[in-house]
Image 1 (spheres, rainbow, N blue to C red):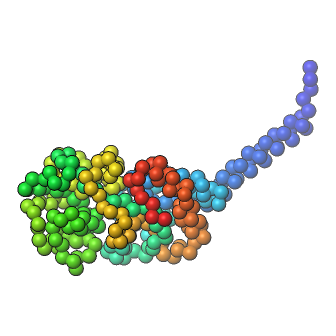
Image 2: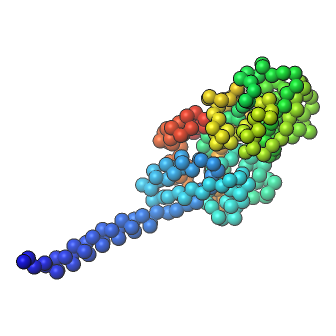
Image 3: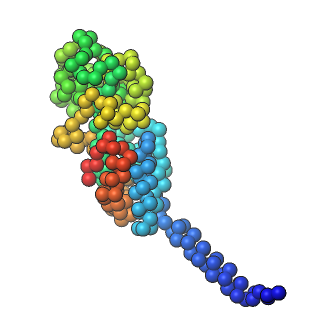
Length: 271
C-alpha cells in the first residue's frame, strides 16, 4: 500500500488556496458602480460592464419602472450614474426639482412613432380623429410637436420643446387629443384612430418603428439632438476617471453592434 506524502499534500492544498484566493481577490477588487436604467436597457449595459472588467470596473445595473426615481436616486447617492432620459427631459427635470446633476455622455436617439390598429397610412383617416399621446410633460410636449410636424395642429412657437394642449393655437383638422399614461397607450390602440408612442414603451409592447410604425420622427432633424439619450452623474463626479472610462467603453463599435443585435435599428447610436 502506497504511503501519501503529507508534506506534499499540504503544499498542493496551500497552492490551490492561494490560486483560488487570488481569483476571488481579483474579482473583489473590481470597483463597482450602480447604474440606473429603465426597461430592458440593462442588457446593453451588462455587455458594457463585462468589457469594463479589464479596466477594473463593474457596473451593477438597476432597472427602474418609472422616469422619476432614477434622477432622485442619483441625486440622493443611491446610484452612481443613470442612463434612461433625453436631454430635454433631463433639463426640465433638474430645473423643476433643483437637482445638481450633469450630462456625462450621449448614447442613442429613440424616435417616437405613430401606431394604429385601424389604419396603415395617415391618408386613410376619416374626418374626425382621436389620437392618444403621453401625459408627461416631456414626452407629451414632444408628441404635440410631432403632431404639428405631421400637419394636424399649429403650436405657439414660444412654447418651446415641451408645449401642452393649451399651447395649441389652431386645429387644422377635427382632432381630439387624449393624454394618457405612456405605458397604457399600446393597450388602448383599439380605442383611438392612432397614437404617438414612446420608442421604449412601444418596444416593450412588441411594436417597432421598422415594422409597425406608420411614420416616425426623423432622427437627422437638427432639433432631434434635444431628444438624444444621455448618461448622467452628480455634477461633482464629472471629472471622475472611472466614469470617463465607462463612457469611452460605451462609445465603441462593440456597443453599436450590441444595440443593433438587441434592438435592430429601434435605437439609433449617436456616438
